[in-house]
Length: 116
Image (cartoon, rainbow, N blue to C red):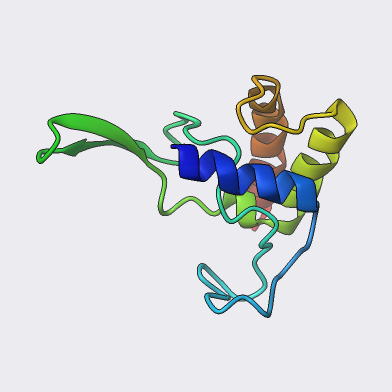
């Protein structure tokens, strides 16, 4: 979890970038994806629309699996999330106020999905 926090901290400091065509992994999800957040600042969101608890037999525990979630890579969502993070003065990924942005981001994403 510390490596995710470190990456999100770097992403917050950098700001919105859109698609990162220079990334060697681009596109890792879909053509035209927003790469502002490689790691989701909401992890784990625990919203069953975007993931599920995955049992790991080797460790006899559960982790949040959201590998198929594309919400944070939607350009409108990423722009909104980064703007709200900056507006709220959030600089750290473990700032609890980040979770307050999730319902807004989810609403943007779900409206787009339902109209597609």
